[in-house]
Image (cartoon, rainbow, N blue to C red; front, side, top):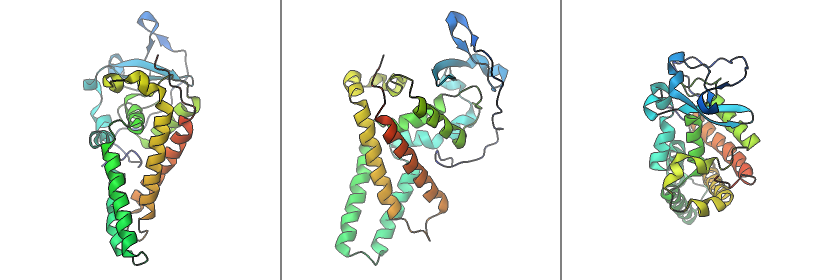
Length: 250
C-alpha cells in the first residue's frame, strides 16, 4: 500500500527534466501545458497557478486523472475519508499494545496514558476540516511540466511542498481550493487561517511525539518509524510556515 510519507517505486518511469522555454499562451492568454505527459493527454490538462516562477497544472476533470496516479495516492484519499493517517493509526495501536507491557511504568500511569491516547485519537477523527490533508491532496492534484502526471513519487512531491512553502506566493492557496466551497463561513474562517493551521500542526506534533515515544525499537518496523519521523519533520516545517501565511481569499 502506498504511503505519502514512504517512498515507493511504481511501474511508470520517472519524469525527465525538460528544456526551459517560454510558456505557451493559449486562448484568452491562458498558459498551455507542454510537459512530459504523452501529447495525447495535453488537451486534458489545464493551467492552475504559478508559484516561485514555476507553472502548475491539473487535469480538466477527475475522469482524466491517470489510474496509476490515483492508485499511488490512495492512502491520502483514505486519510481524507477516515480523517486519520494510516501510519498514525498503526503507531497508535502499537503504543496501546505496548503500554500494558511496560514494566517501568506504574499501573495508574499506564491507565492515564491510555486515556490520553484514546482522547487524542478521538480528536483526530472528529476533526472536520484538516488543512494538512488539503496540502497533501494538493500535491496530487497539481503538477508541474517536469513532473510525470501518470505517477506519484514522494521525493519529488516533497520538493514541491518545500517550494510552495519557500515562496509562499499563492494568495489564499488553501482557501481557494474547490473543497472549501461548501464551508458555511469562508470569510470568518480565512481570518483565522494562520491560527487554525498553527493549532492543527502543534496538536498533531504533540500527538505524534507521544506515539513515537511509545514505540518499541525491537518490535516496530523501521518503515513505520521512518514514516512517523518524516511526518514530524513536515509538521514542524508547516507550523513555521503558517506563521507568515496569507489570509487572502481573493
